[in-house]
Length: 369
Image 1 (cartoon, rainbow, N blue to C red):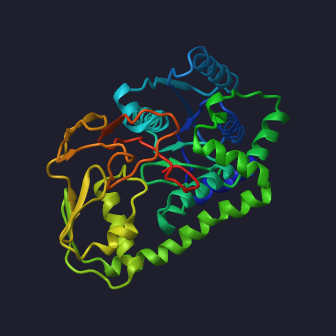
Image 2 (cartoon, rainbow, N blue to C red):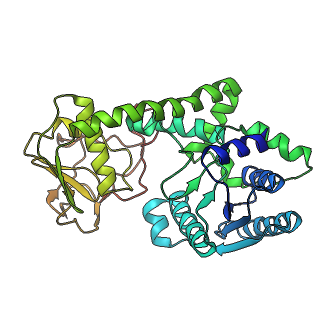
Image 3 (cartoon, rainbow, N blue to C red):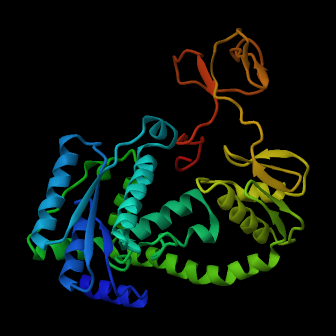
């Protein structure tokens, strides 16, 4: 099943010659993909492993497993260090920072090997998880396209039609016990909680949810032509001026998403519904940390507010850039903005800028943002 899926994928996308860089973490999915590609024997393969050294000895054991597997398969292996920058982790979180470093190292390996493509082992369960997460965080039909089989940067995902259960059977038949990353079971990560939910829903639900991505990609081809027809902008490297705007609310939102992504590829969870309503106003509106919208112009923030972190205590005014704030217990003096504290908690606050990686769960909201 897995070999047949790989064969069809390579033929459908005209991938007939190597070398092909195969990203191998040592986990179930990537190990199975490497083994199946090696059994096909259709392409020259180069395995690539990025060691982030995040789990101490376990990370080194992952690398050792990949080395042994490649030796058995007689597939050349290139290993790159993927140590994370502390500042990147602070701003974007461990997962995002690791993903950025991993992709950078894989592309370096691809360029050095003279390869066109990098194969990563995302499979059908990953697709379903991604769709559920996109439904939770928004992004519209474009976001529901999910994980793309082939990306513009040469990253391919040939296992998107294969389930995790099929992959596990494939390895069991060959007596391979792949590595397990404990962070994949950590409930602090939203994806892991979604994974548990989908496992309980069963294989039929996973098939149905994953199929939404293919449907959305087909629909998006039609919708994008409508967006192209409605687009009347003056675009530069730093800004987009909307010369005219369509009356249709969805088209306005789609145009905003397009140009927000163009100017700030890291943008996530942007409320384009609210922004689309304010496109005609003269108000200056914050879009992302890097972008703002004013008088029909979406552009980079001209004067970024410097990082600040200010302690606030009752009856002691504190200066915050752009405002003077006084915090007063609500029992003593009415307040414009009430903040309910946990029982017995001290009324002490830290006010600071929003930062990449910040998450919170609004009262009454079912999940974090």
